[in-house]
Length: 298
Image 1 (cartoon, rainbow, N blue to C red):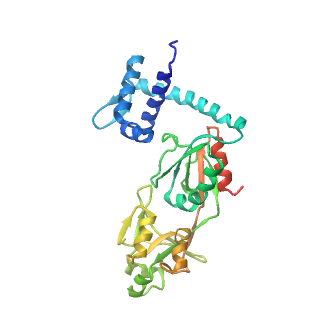
Image 2: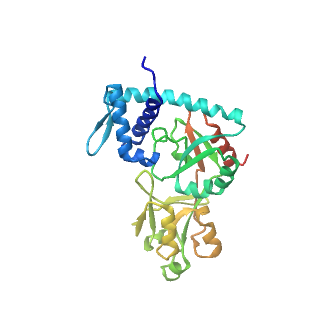
Image 3: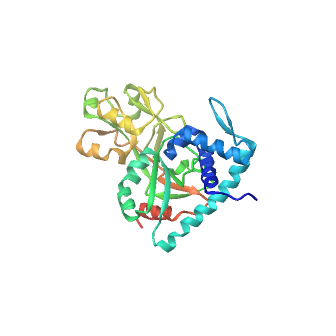
C-alpha cells in the first residue's frame, strides 16, 4: 500500500471539494484559491495515482468511474476524521471547527441574524459560514452541515428541528399606493390591483393563500411584477409599487412606523415554522448542537 504524504492528503481533500462543487471555479471560490492552483494540484494528484479522476470539457467537469469510486471512499474516510476531530471538543470544553449552513433569506433575517452575535461570542473557536440561498439545494452534496427551510420543504430523510411557532403570512402595501388604488374590500378585488408575485426556490410562482375563520382560498391573478426575493418585494411595496405577500415578521418594523399597512387584515394565512435540518446518517457536530440549543432558547 503506497504511503500517503501530506501533499496527497491535501490534494485528495481538494479533489473532494471540486467534486462537491461540480467544477473548478466554484470550488476555488469556496476555498479562496485560484482555479489554476486547483487545476495544477489535481493534475499532480492524477499523475501520482496514474488515473484520470475528472472528464474535462470547456463547459463541464464530471467524475470518471475511478473518480466516483475514489470520492465514495474519501467521503467515508474524511467523514470519520471530521467526527474524530469534532469529538475532541469534549476535552476542550467548547465546540470548535467549521460549521457551514445553507439558509433561506427569510430565515436568515428572522431566525439566524438575531442570534449570530451571541453564537460567535460564546463559541469563538467555531468558524461559521452562512450561505443565504432561496433555491433548494442538496445540503449533503453541497458540503453543508445543516440547512434552514420551511417545515413543509425539508427532505424526508433528514432530521428536522422546529424553530419557533407557525408563521403568519399577510399582504402589505404603502399608504401612498392605497390612497390612489381601487377599492379593496375582499380578496376578489385584488384582481384590480398591482400585486407582486414571488418565485420560490422550486422555480414556481407562489399563489397567495388566504384564510378567514373557516374560509380558505388561493389567489390566482396576473402578477404586475414577479421577483425571486422577499426583500425586493417588500422594497417595491414600500415605494408604492403594489401589494406584497410576506411573513408578518419581515415587515414588523414597517408596520410599526407606518411605511407599510396590512391589506385586508381579516385575511391572512398560517404556514409551517422554520426548521433546521441535517442528515440523519451523520453524527451531529458539537458546533451544530450548540447552535440548535441557542435557536431553541435552551
